[in-house]
Length: 160
Image (cartoon, rainbow, N blue to C red; front, side, top):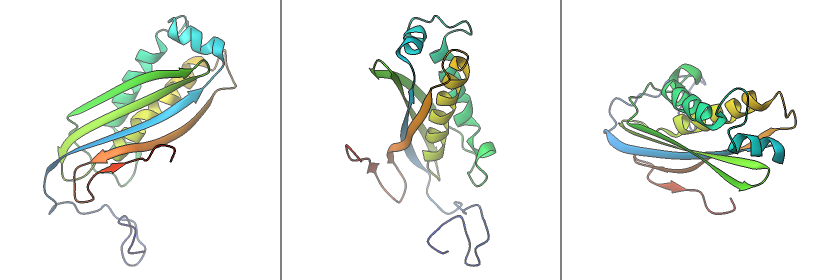
């Protein structure tokens, strides 16, 4: 079990001690996708949903969720986030992609915060549109890039 930092030598769960790590600037970028009917996506883009502007509500949900990641993921450290940016794109007529970039100056990274932000945005889109589109799917939530800290820079290779 020693390869997994969240378990001790006996296999017990633990919060990793980051007290001796240097404080550095860290960034993580995650992405995900919601697939939905073209008619649903058109209503989102036209801001024609009865519940309001779906993407702005999803953006706020993402920001709020990133700030509360340590309350959702048991072994995450609470972090004083420096910034959270959330964007949406429409690669085709039946999907919306979500991207979240989170920055912090701290002893540990913000990968989980970026992933939680994307997840919350996708779930919010689903929640706001489920009354008209039960065929929606959420997929491809993943870390795209991270920098800072001892492990250095990671950037997902295209197509991976």
